[in-house]
Image 1 (tube, rainbow, N blue to C red):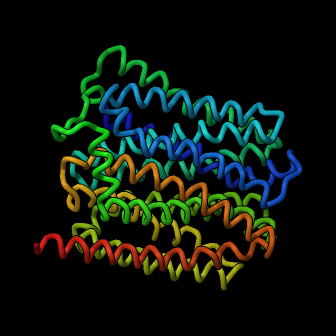
Image 2: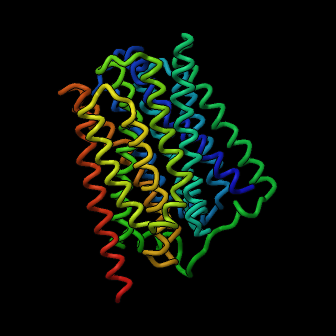
Image 3: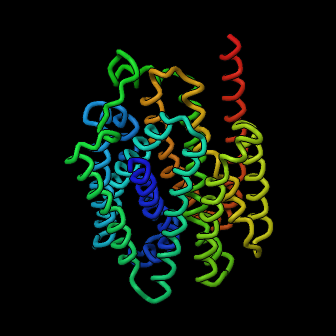
Length: 384
């Protein structure tokens, strides 16, 4: 049951995050914004992500995972309801802090729970279910917009999906469901002390930076691909919208099968090949604007990066700090979802939407460098 709830939670946050890209043009029109103004909706999430990064391991240790996920579900649902009804742009921006907090706590808590089971297939499946949500979000948004429903109705549906998590977590708390109410204790130190140690560990900081770049790249493609395809390249509305779903479909399928490739090549080689494919796919998206195959290929290439980095973390750092480290890594990674799409929108406002595919290419190169540094560092540590 705990695994099923974890999978559903990742579907829910995938829907909440994945649908925004299709809705950006409608939101811009409603509030009379520009590509630069809209980036505030990403930046406003930063405070929520930072709080989640610094508090998730402490909260789960003190109140248990179920209560933390209940708090996160309430925060995320409330944010989506505000998105649906807000008459003012700045109120919608302010709600981003609640959205960042909810997603950050869910992401950190469940990743820590699954990582403790030390199963690469299970971690891949978890993030595969995120992909199911992320591809469903654009499909739902595209379909509702196509039948002339207002974009706010999309957020009401998203809020209803996430709201079911509130009911599930209330049940887990009231029934004292053991798998989600155990307080993880890996050492005699306090959760705060373990967090402090994690923040001083180079591998943790490198993993956080790698995943921040990764999540920023994933979110930038997901949030801006519709605008690039439809507004800049004149792709018809439905094709542009469903091409974003194809991107998320590639990511989903890649995550469901990534565990098989790990068994063949190992985790590090799988990541190497994924990053090479990512770079080539991004170059194709940039140089060949009229084809649609690059977006699902980008999704496939991105698929293993997050789950395998998290899965490898317990093998690279002391077991005592694993919960604190994973909580920090996953939450701080979400900062990338705010900072990088915002930067992309800023440059797009100056140079046009076609600059966005170009900006993604050096990010892929940076991820490859960070991955190799972490591999070399782990090899040295194992030899000592």
